[in-house]
Amino acid sequence: MGSGRGELIRQSSRMGSSRLSRRSELRECGRASGSNWSVQSMLWKEHPEWLLRDGQTDWALVDFGNPKVQRWAIEVLSSAIERYGLEWVKWDFNTDPAPVWKGDAAREVAHVRGVYTVMEQVRRRHPEVWLEMCAGGGNRIDSEMIRRADSYWLSDQTTLTDGQRLQSASATMVLPARYRYTAMAQSSVQGAAPKVGSEFSDEPWLTAMSGTFGIMEPFAEWSASVREHEVARFKEIRHLLDGDVRIFRDDPTLPNRGWEAWEFSDAASGEAALFSFRQDSSDQHHSFDGRHHWDVDLPKRGATLLREPEAAALSQPGTVDH
Image (tube, rainbow, N blue to C red; front, side):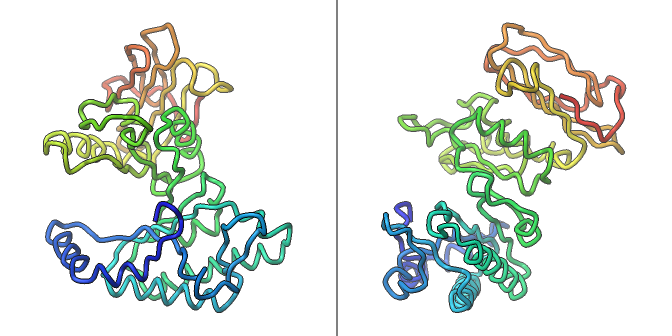
C-alpha cells in the first residue's frame, strides 16, 4: 500500500480466515477492527475511464463526480465493512488533485459533492462505523466534511515535533479534540533506532496528546508498565481537551520559540491541565496565568504536564490568551 499501487480487494480475498480470526481476538480484548482505506490500482486496470490524469505523471485521481464511481465506492466500502466486521475506517488522501482538475471548477465541485454522497451513503448503511478522514495536511478539513466524519487525521508530519505542535495548537482554536488526531511516531524518523516509550522525552508525547491520541510505535514490544503509563496519563486529561483553551507564547508571532504552554480547563469543575514546553529560551523558570496560576521549571527542550493546581482561578472562562 505504501507505493500507492496496492490492491486492497484482491489482497483481502487472500487474507480470508486469518483476518476473521484476528477480528475475533480483538473483540475478546474489547477492541475494534478497522481498515486504512486507499483506493488504488484496481481501477487503473479495470476502469481507466474513471480516472482523471494530469498527462505528466502516472498518478491519477478517482473521479467521484462520476455517478458510476460513487455507486462502485459505496458497494466496495460496504462489502468490506460487512465482510470483516469493520468498526473503523480511515479514508486516506495522498495526492494533490488540483493538476488533474486543471482549473475546471465544475469538475472540482462535482468531485467533492460525489465524495460527500459516498460518505453519506456509507454512514446511512453502517451508522455504527467510525469514519475517520485524512486532512491532506489540513487542506481537506472543511465544515461539510466534518459534518460527515467522526474524526480527522491532521497531518503525516508526525516525526517533526515542532511542526506537529504548531499545527495541533492552532487546531485547538477551531476544532474539537476528535478532529485533532495526531500520533507519537518518533521511531519513524529516518535513521532512528527503535526505543521503548520510557526512552522518549515528554516533548513528543505531550504534543501527540493534545487531541485524539495515537501511538505509531512498536507498542507491542514495550513492557506493560510503559504502555499503561502513557495511556493512563492521556485518559486522565482527555476530558479537558474540549474545554476552555488558552495558548501562551513568549511572542505570539513566533511559535516554536522560547516558552509555550497550552492550558485546557473545565469551567464547571475548575479542573485544568497545562502542557508546557521550553524550546530555545535561556529562562529555566516560567509562570503562566490562565484559569490557574502555574509555575514551571524545565531544562531546554523539556516538557511537562501539570494538573489541577491548588491556586485560585485568575481569569474568566471562554478567553484565549497568547
